[in-house]
Image (cartoon, rainbow, N blue to C red; front, side, top):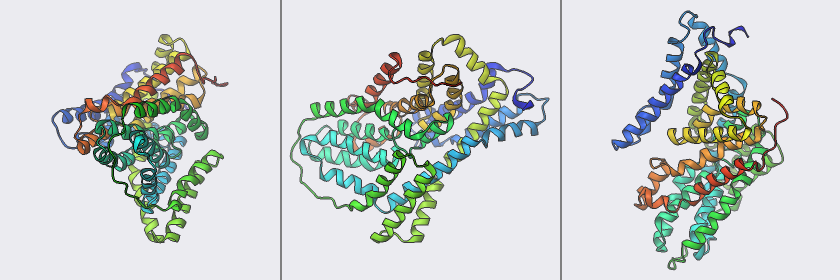
Length: 442
């Protein structure tokens, strides 16, 4: 289209609106964190910060161009196909997660795991339970809220290191953000770079598996046996776990993500009604509530996508790509850039999904230049962006562990094996080109 580029090329200056967003959201959040405020990153909501950045982009660039034209360009970016697909998927994912929680599926997994954890394998077992829950539910925050209090209680009862148990729960919680079929972070990455979710999940699992295995071994070696704790059998209905199994199997066999999530919601409702856990209208209310929790992500994705479209219109994306081409000469360098840029934004915003939404359009442009497969790029966007959060002192997981376990950030970091190992594995894979299959098209 003729309006695809502004008459004036603003080059790097086109990114000022994005910088404004980061300063408003991250800067104010960090300021209130230092001040000790409760929920510091809620002081300047991300959507408000994004709206301010969009307003700046519309008002302060191309002043001779009609505002209506710039708004049209913005809305084309905000409503593009990938974003609308993402919106449908995350709404369905939110509905499924809420319905599954309502019938007791999440608590069933927790209770089943606790019942079968050997006494001498308690800390590794906490890590594995958190991994299973986060992978099934696709939510790190939900896993943290569920597992961290249980982990602290078990560690105290067994006279084990509470900080180690907390670190294990945190690590496992973030595992699913890059390996779950219904993770919003993974869904965003796949949608933006036009990859297949089944391939990306498989790739991500192979990427993090060395870190996963080594983490279990390390926890088993250093945690000790503790003292005997009273064995309390926690009841659970194996049938309640079936919806998660259906989601995983349907995704593996290649069923569309939309159909997979619809099948998951239907199966959850049928099982809940059969068990007497939920009525039909309780199911619809739960699904609706879960969808509503995802509204912010849908709206924010549209806001940022439109902002990126304006930045591209003003010449910013071309400037960045050309600059990177002059500095980065190989696909390896490009992969390092994509990985650590996403990790940096994830750690800054305390949200790996937000980081993926911001960096994925740029990563997609770069991958086509360097012939990097969409599967690998989606993996690079998700794995480190998820792991890095557990190393941030003001992340929700760290704060929860401190609240429940009365442990300091430094105590937790001593036992944060998994995220450090993930960083090492990703660096090794990039450096030696492990698993790198070149894309055959630009």
